[in-house]
Length: 425
Figure 1 (cartoon, rainbow, N blue to C red):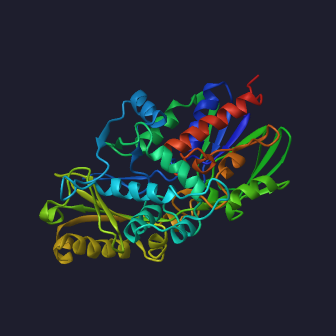
Figure 2 (cartoon, helix red, strand yellow):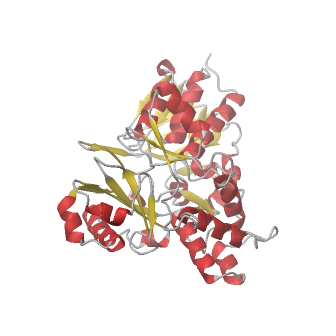
C-alpha cells in the first residue's frame, strides 16, 4: 500500500491521528521506533494486576479519553484528588497547593513573561505558600521552577481548575487498553503499522516527503505527521532538509520535564500503618527521594506508588530500577514510620522505568519555558501543506503534558491534513 501520509510515532497522538486519517479515507503508514505501541503509556501486566510504568491518571472528565473508553467498553475507576486531611477543617493537600499557586500567580505580570522562580523571588508572600507552590510546580508539572513560563502556568492552572477538572480516573485493567482501542479503531484496510522503525531524517518539498530510517530505508508520501516528543526535536534526533527555522525557534522555548516513579506491590499490610492511605488517596510528605505517594491499587492487591518530579527526579536519574525500588522502600518506611525491612518482607515486586534515559522519550512530559506560552501553537502550524506536527507539547491551551492533550493534538493534525487535501483516489 502506497501511503498518502506517513505518521511518525505511535503514542497517543500518532494513534489518534492515524485513526482519524483512515476514517477520513486517507491511507496512512504509521512508524514506531519501539517494538510496542503507546509511547509514554506503558502498562506492565503482572499476576496481581496491571502496573503503570508511564501515564496512570485520566486528569478530569475529558471527552478525548472518556469517549474512547466508552466506545471500547473499557472500565474506569473514579478516584479522589487527595487524601483526607487530619482535620476536616483543613483543606486537602492538593487544595492547599492549588491555593498556593493561585496566591503566587495573582502577582503575575500580564506583560513580559518570567520564570516561576523569578516570580517567587520577587513577591512578598508567606514562605510556606512559596514552598508549597514550588513543590507543586516541581512535582505535578515535573518542571524546573527556574525555566517554566509563568504565563503558560496561568493557562495550565485555569484548565486544572476548570469544569470537570476535580474528577480523576484510572483504567481498571491498565492504561494500555486505551492504546489498543485507538489502534483497533483505525480502518485496517487503509492503515499499515511498522514497529522497530527509527526515523532519522526527513527530506521534503511541497507535497513530497522522503523519510529515511536509521537502517537506511527510504519511504515516500505526499505528507507526514511528526508526533515524536519535543525532547527528541530539541536534541536534533530527526534531521529536516530543508531546515525549519520557525519550528526550531518554537522547540527552543519548550522544555522537557523529568519525573521518577516507583510502584511497590505488597502482600501484607505494613504500608497501611496508621490508616494513612485511603482508597485513591495521596500522602504528601515533601521529603526526598519521593515527596508524594499514592495508592495505585487498593487491597486485596495493593500497589503504593512514589513520585518525584523536576529537580528531585533528575537526582534519581542515575539509579537503576533495583536502586530506585530500594530508595522508595526506605522513603516509604520513613513516611509511614515503619521499619523499611518490614516493607521489604511484604514486597511482592517493585517496578520503575527511567523515561529520562529512554532514547525515544528523554523525559516525562513537556512544559513551556519563559517566552514559550504560544510555542506549542507555533510548532503545530503546518508547513506548506506537507509537514504536520502533533504531540502533547503542541498544545498551548493548557492541555500539554496530558494524554488527552496528545489525543486532541492528533485529532487536530488529522483535520489539518485532510483540509490540505490528502485524499485517496
